[in-house]
Length: 233
Image (cartoon, rainbow, N blue to C red):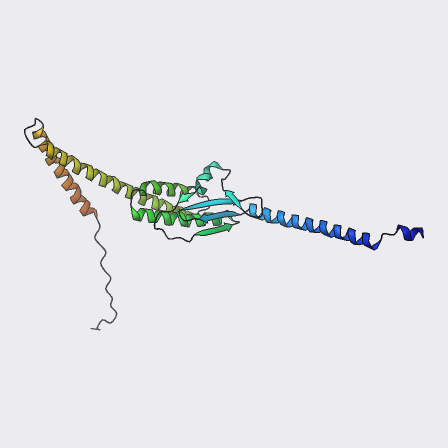
């Protein structure tokens, strides 16, 4: 009788089974959340928005990210937020990568396209944006030799575009100076003679600059002629 009294009742067995099952479920859920958080913390996020591009690093949570700031100060410039030039058509949205080199390749493509679009537009923001894009491209660690060569070539093109802008500013300044000298040359002011001489000298210089600029422009390439359907001799 004593052994029968000491044996656990069926209700107690069910209760302990439920407690054990609940604890096992909690352990499995915790392990799943930790695993998802561990994976997310190793993700890089590339967010292409309507006006800019941002880079993030996953949090130690199942989802979400913070701005990616590398521990190496020399690489922080490579992953900063950068603006997209107006009129550039790119695929918007959020992408994630476990491989940082793959992230670098995506950034390289976006930055090169932004730089080429900016240089072709050649507007007031071209010098500022060109410098920013080039600095970020040169800071990317995951580029190969061929890609770095292309970045250098784009850097030379950016300098050329900047030089042309400075040349245009200089020509505009010369034209403005000529007009002012011509105004001061009118009447009998003591500076009239010198003003006329300076206006004539600057006019000759401006004409020479414009003439040389025309000569420096390469002629258009001849159009290719098709021989399809041509009569045989």
